[in-house]
Image (cartoon, rainbow over all chains, first blue to last red; front, side, top):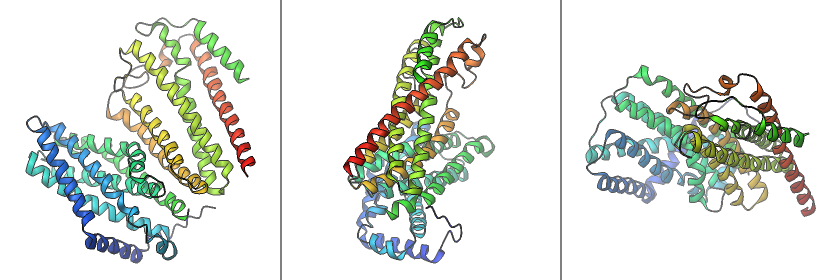
Length: 227
Length: 211
């Protein structure tokens, strides 16, 4: 029996509490965040050593997104795994919808912070070819939204399996290809100097893919959680 | 019924006259064997998702057997489709794999459903396995559909029916192709459902014995 009551979709207070709790946990533990930051920095530095001298605009763009993809899958895979000890409390205290809301928002903020940090490191090492900042950042935000919500759902699925880190990649990569293709394509066109009216079709498609991912996550997550 | 349709497809598909065209020549006959595979795959995967939704609604493990066996059949169709497509592409495009968006899309859909089976094998508890794999099935299917529409927009395809290349309607002057083609689609899809239904009956029986 599927019960989807439309209202209230968002219990704001509980969601804010849960997000706050995630922040506090990450702030106190510190080494997961430090690990991710170091992961990001050393990946970018390694590719800087490897790509030195022949970095065209397209390669800059592809490299940026690929590194973001790998950092995202590493960073977000922990979002349910670290909850193992607490999941029993959640099961009794929270509705699954509040939990997934808070996880989606938290991992979106987390990934966005990673993306901007990675942009800064890229600027320092590789230089910065961006001219149209508004469009580039809009596309970056939409791409991060897709990546973070798809990986949050996949992380909830792989939380239940026996070999989590492998499942995360196996399940996640084929799923994320539409978001990745659209955002890489858009951002390469933006770097080439395209304006809004030339890429709005692809931007709208990206938005609708994001909406599909988030809607599916809302509907399907309670089934995973109850099992 | 299904066997009769397939016998007709094979004989007519290989022997009936086809339009003579440059480059394509006799390879146009692949239409009766390659295209129905994709029709079959999409139909079977759709069936699999419908049963996955039914499973989540009812928690009845028979629905899960339907869903997973149909996905199994879909993979078989997909592999056959990709192989026949590559053979055809070798003779008409010059290479078996040319990074064409259609080829990439088909490879990705195969990856998604192979991941589905890896997921099924990595969960021990049966009820949990059924539930999680049903969720992944639905999630993946609804993301695969936009992919099939997005990819061709991002790059030009050589595939017939895309990017200004004529589909088979343009070649089909005397409706000969069409006659065989529709029979072929029906025949191959029925064959798929038949094999899947045998597998389903087998698994249902095994489950009854186990219980």
